[in-house]
Length: 287
View 1: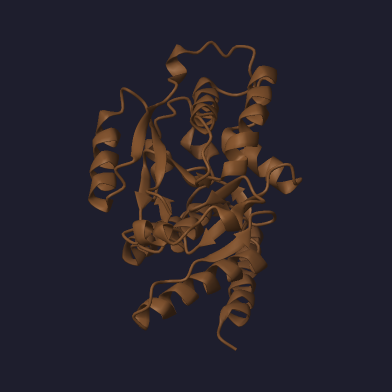
View 2 (view 1 turned 180 degrees about the horizontal axis):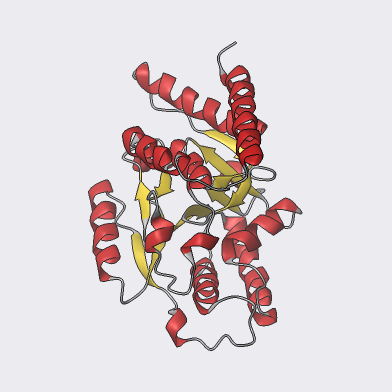
């Protein structure tokens, strides 16, 4: 395929993120993925909008990137706090737009629904990749329908030629009406009802940094309102370059948190968790 084109979304005032992302892209040879100046929520008047100024600005930024002139190749969109796998360039070099002609988006990472079938599928996709690499072969990417799997997250995705043609009008209409959901949840709603067709690649070739919600550039977002470790942790677990030691420390900290003073409810949660672990291991282990 041609050199991967695309953009990373970055606020003018976020110079540290810009420098870090530019260094990473240069190191990976992804020099055709260029900076896109994000809409700054501080400049918006959103009194009549159900979203916060930062959420509206984020929606507008993604919409503007997707609305760039259409091409016949896959085009990458990144947020500027995204971790990129060492194997990303080689994996993308093997991708062609043709197999994705029927969909709008291809996610390089996402927050999956915490449902057994989807998590097992992602785990097995990661195992397939790892087995190939252990045998000295390029890792095979598994491709899954995003419907029923994608919950939220728009840190890293590819816009297909169909998406480049059709999504701008859908996004423009949403902005005219005043979007009622943040961008990634808006995508999730439309993926769920079939208006947007999308795929998810496994293992994930990108990921947000652990705990990134606590350092968000969306200044009006309450960190307590963002789904925390148990969702973010599963997302990080399927990243091909996951730091498992850091992830284990991160999860251990959250597992020790006291979430309720109701003793019976704590016991019920612990039992439900153990039953889920048992079911997952039975479903995911090699037959």
